[in-house]
Amino acid sequence: MLDEKELLSLRKPARYIGEEWNEVKKDWNNKIRVALSYPDFYEVGMSNLGLSILYHLINERKDSLCERVFLPDIDFENLLIKRDIPLFSLESKRPIKDFHIFGVSIQTELTYTNFLNLLYLSKIPIFSKERKDFPVVIVGGPSALNPMPLLPFVDAFVIGEGEEVVGEIIDEFVLDREEFLKRISNIRGVFVPKFGIKKVEKRYVKDLDKAYFPVKPIVPYTEVIHERAVVEIFRGCDRGCRFCISGMEKRPRRERSVKNILSLTKKILKNTGFEEVSLLSLSTSDYSNILPLVEGLREITKDKRISVSLPSLRIDNFSLQILDIIDTGRKTTLTFAPEAGTERLRNVINKPIKDDDIFSVVGEAVKRGWRKIKFYFMIGLPTETMKDIEGIVDIVRRIRTENKRITLHLSINPFIPKPFTPFQWEKFISKEDYLKKRNFLKRNIKGIRLSFRTWEESFVEALLSRGDRELAKVIYDVWKRGGKYETWSEKFDFSLWEESLKGKEELYRKILDGFSEEETLPWDFIDIGINKGFLKVERKRARMEKVTYPCFGDLKKCTGCGICFRGW
Image 1 (tube, rainbow, N blue to C red):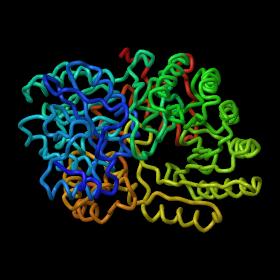
Image 2 (cartoon, rainbow, N blue to C red):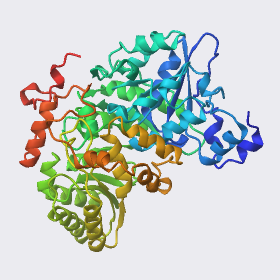
Image 3 (spheres, rainbow, N blue to C red):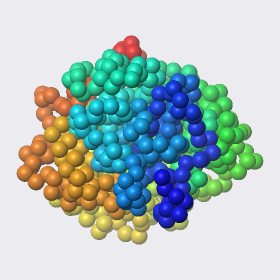
Image 4 (spheres, rainbow, N blue to C red):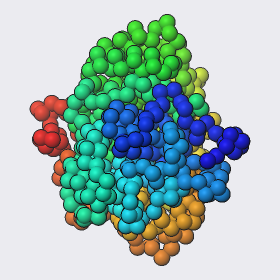
């Protein structure tokens, strides 16, 4: 094992030592042993709520234990390889290969090579067919919704939400690998590739008030991305943005009660000492009792120097009123996501925000003391023209003309077609078109911060998100060539993908050029509860520039997505 001197030689040794506040350590005797991972650095993985929920939920069971492991940085990786030490958990420092189940949450396709690197450093065979013993490698998270590119590397996929299914998987555990896989293959929401492609229905939690939520989350010793108490107020979204996979796959919309949210908040603050509370959802201001909730939070946090953040607010004056209620005088950055530069294109993507609403909200925000505002836009959306790109310039110029004292930041990303959305059939923007539009924006927008995601990073994500099993060879080859840490722009190496894709132009052109509505898609065997016919209708309505307004669970306003009639 590593000694103190070796650990202190690392860039961030606190990533690897464990011993944090609220960490759970259990005796290994007669326990079903589960290791959980988020395939990125500690500071990213420790900010993931899903991993925290499953970690504490498993450790609540008397028959099980759960420990954590994250992707090591290159200095620690080199040390492990040099010393021939397999990757080990934070809690007990035992090798990951000694666990019964290795669960990995994959949130983005750019961590696929990280996932392979975790297996390699853990001395677990990369390919499922080569594994003769434990651990059984189970993958979940949004990127598991299209399992095909990872098919050869994974023993089982969990489709959908994990709170209930994780217990069912552990209940079926036996000390026989093949028998265990056979048993969990019969659980709804679990897909075991070795038994063939079959219809898989996603799992979801019906009642959030009854769902488990950790009130003693681990408090890291080192800085992480989100250092705050996080409380999920609802899941799902009725807005129906046509590019958004989360808005589709997380349906139906389910809320926690105000009473439950406030109770959870009090307990988490007491058990952690965090100085910020964040309400998690896809659209916070859509919570049906948002005013009583923020008023309750104000009572909890007043006079305690605890701030409340509300991410995912809509661009409207109601959002500003909500912020006024919890105002602590600390104004950071106000973030909005119009996504497109014109009202026409916003109707196409089903995000019907008027230009005047944008200008009104910014003006009101400035009056209330906000000085930093960030906007998110996409380029390459279906039906987009240069007039839509010019619209982004027009919005920025007018905001700057009317509000001299604010700092603006624009973040601009290429649109990526995702499975299970009305735009799942669309093409991905060409590099030539991307550069033309990016350069136009750079020439015409001066004096503000402009950040662009590279076309190359987006190309890889677009390729992997709609790929089939043929891409597994490419992912493996990129990893063998040294590809890893690719969610970090400074570490992303597109040349590795170019080399691995040589001779496979037909494969990637088919994926990037889009699909016809008649052909079978690689992920069609996954059932997320949304009718494919609904997605086709929504795609047609997009071309007609028609808005589909949210139902908010009211069957009289039903849009026909189908989720309410599943009876799950």
